[in-house]
Length: 336
Image (cartoon, rainbow, N blue to C red):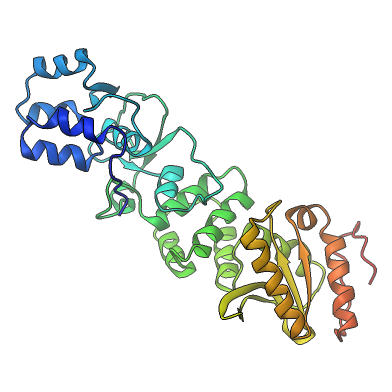
């Protein structure tokens, strides 16, 4: 689940809570050392005793009515609990914070300081530092039934992010990222989408789920499909074809099977050493089968899609493709 052990001041927390009731200590550990005023008073601790702990610095106030039962800087998990407890009993973590807990941000993306929290529409919540509030009429449906801290379901998290993205490509990227992570499927996302009465870009996102089902796994692969392959009349490639390289399974982004051409797409400027050598071995294995490999970056696909199409088309023709490139628009520079 989404629980994390308290690693910031854990020993201090044990010392500071040793004289407290057992149930209260258990609740503190469950909530990463964070507690509400109502929970403190409910455990039989007086207002005066609470104030003494705060005045002495043994406890600290995180938000109005929300405290950390330890000294020192709270870690990220404690701040998650502080935000969701401060927003009320039905609040849940959502959007980028939920994506962080589900591992959808990736190892290269550091979460920002904001904690995203969803509350029922119409509920009044006092502003909290570094907490962004979202309001929903379907919160009880979106909430995961068991994970703690409370969080929106994975599919709802992805659709929330897709629907609030700055642009449609950004929204599509969230869908593809979720499917590529193997944590969900296009079918499960489609079912969740159908249950929503309102969703921004519903038609376009539905089409993107169809692309995900055919193997498109990233915004770059989606861009290649819609900027390069289809507009220029290239044959349909096979997406994410599984191959075994030195007993290790790997996947080719796009393979034109009949013409022994592989197109690899990668938006990263540089690869870790291990990844770079894995790519080299995959290219070598493809060459041993008589395949040619072309590689394109994000800049190639987004800024020079016609040039990419022309190059892919030339290689395809040398390998027996009888087709002709199509102009993608009146200013398309490709030669047919």
